[in-house]
Image (cartoon, rainbow, N blue to C red; front, side, top):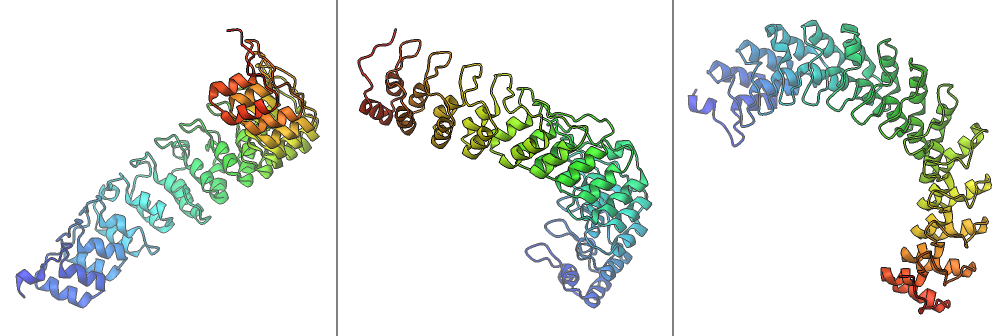
Length: 453
């Protein structure tokens, strides 16, 4: 055979031998190799015929190429070896074949992401491959480029069958350090199992004595925070049951997992928390309880659940600025929540530290329906805050002409002056809000009133 032809490359740098692999033509490959074709010639992506055979999971081709001294340690542009590529297939035959040829220490060769074949096997959820690699002394504690060990990748899987891969790794070394290994973002394998909502894997991981269910990631969130945030009620229950420390951790904002479940309106998850003896509705660093978080997000299902399950709940409890749940709901514009709180005797004119009632917050933000609901619920329009501003001043400062109209229809004085002598009309003019000025002037606002300056 012409030596030029047998290793002739196409535009991808691929040789006839590589095409034999791709087309599954073993007979042609044997003929080429007999004629002296280079078994380790690499294409433009630095892959050899052995890479391609491994990627396809073609056992017969791998056997042939290895017999002809195919290099199983050859790295492509991504630093992947044929060993890495054999882990993608459900059958472990090709992997077993390669391992027979390998010298000790070669089994943990790393790709560009610092991942070994064991990382790959864990990622592809192939327990047979994991067993084989561990039997060949693959190191289960090598961190990849993200700081993840194979157990992270095994746990980071939505399929319940991932428990087999997880168990294979843990049976080799059920140590606390492995179970609670944190990647470079502080996340443990349990964090990932929770994030995937994989109850089966969470169950396996937490069944080990050494598994810490309250370990913090770099954002100061525990697996319990993640479970709450995603509304995984069954996982929350399991983690609460297996929390040896008995205390519920809070994150850097002082927020507990219950806060996150409450704000996302996960009523079933909130119920699981409230029925557990270790859970109290603690306040965050701002003094806000999960009930207040729920009100601020309009999480009505959660509010109903909390009012039903916690008969001792104080609907008028305040944060460190003296704001109530009703203040939070009014500020965010959640009409249904405002109605719900008023039906349960929330104080309609509760004052915060700025002497703002919930009505002030709604006027500032321009939430018309909330304003009408509060007024219907008995909110006073004639109150002023610590600067002497009325709700009408706040509506004018926010440029909310419709709100000005509603307040005037409810008998607010259009010429009310704050402690500096300013009227709502001056506030509207200051902000350049022509529409507000028109409404105020149509309703007898006096343009000639002067402030104290």
